[in-house]
Image (cartoon, rainbow, N blue to C red; front, side):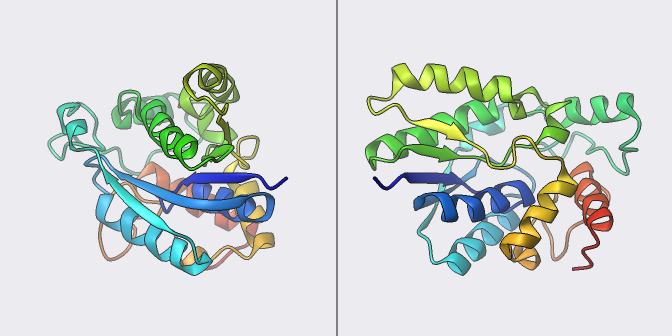
Length: 220
């Protein structure tokens, strides 16, 4: 029996590689991108749209403007300084960076939103792009979080929608390597906390991607 999925696609590395795996393992019915007022919204939406088009998939963008009320996050408010050039080997600095960009219950909200679509469309899975590396500072990237969400979804969806992330147990370097094997279009990816003509290269997301590409020997 065919397995169907809805993919939460931000246009970043993890969600794109998870999408590529989902295409192999499931029938992807829909890609969802949420505009919650994040700094990178325009670039993320453009990247996700280009990636969905590359794979020939339906893609919709959902607005969640009420997230602007959670303005303490540097991802949402330009009046809050975005951490720059964070030393990824300094645990204290990484913890401080994670706190600065934390958006209240973002992944919990996004997953439940996607689960609504998944149930309505008769899909088995919501596919997300989590990773082991960032789970150390972002608990909503962790395996424990996914297990807890899946336990709740058994009650909140009639067809028992589950969350799956094909990158969950991988660090960024391993995700890049998997993407290379899958032929992921790295040139379309946007992994930056800012919007613009090109990624800033200074935010934590940019620095993690750059380090992973360097270790994996990817020059694009």
